[in-house]
Length: 342
Image (cartoon, rainbow, N blue to C red; front, side, top):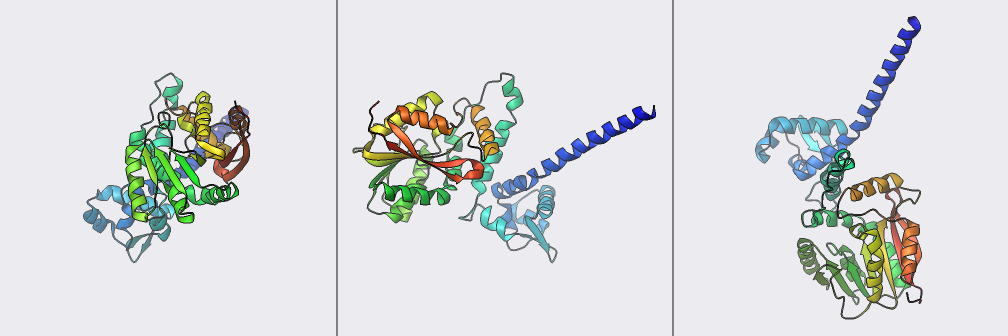
């Protein structure tokens, strides 16, 4: 009996250890949740100059009890500091999470919390055959475009290097979002013809406003690339940034084929996209693919080998596959014409 009692005790301790482990792992979710709430409700601004919970609740018309809970979490995770009996938002939160900051990464938090996590939590019912949801581009397009813009700073130098190496004078950006890449190119090379096509009307409107305010000369088109007739003249470069997941795997060849028809002799195509099974950033790529596969109208990212095969089938070859964010499996991919007609 003593042996049995010892074994039962060991079993209970193992059970408690597993419970403790999952509790500790779940605690890492709190900073992201706290930052998301602070971003969407603009709470960090309430404590930018220092404030009490009572004053902030009154000034911002907020529930005092819930605000106190949010503040308690913020103090625990280091997003807020208490000084002289007043709560202060840390400089990092004000700079990188507040919606009023030009350096805010809030859209990324918004996409994770409102798109990715809710979808992944539907997996039990989806696995049992529940109908997959349809990704609402009109609703979430602006958020996705803002998130994609966060990649620009890292990817843009690679794009500029490619443009210089291939003597590019005209560019078409398919799925241009807010036109960030095109505006940056306009600042670097004002003599280039820069065209962008975007399906989401609200995103195009915002891109046009930002283009006008910055004095950039861009040609922005609101249309679906699948139906669009293309530019009046062939362009030297076509960019496809973060759009592969909108196309079924067996239709991506058609996308490359149509794009190739719009580039000049010696013209090239570049893509910025997560690449599956690269050996680095696989956890992120797998989670991203899980999110895509859970939608009726979104599709998994390809592997490098699949991209090479698709390109080869359309008379293109992959001459560059360079990491942008290795931990996230994001890559800058360059395709050149082989001279072979298919």
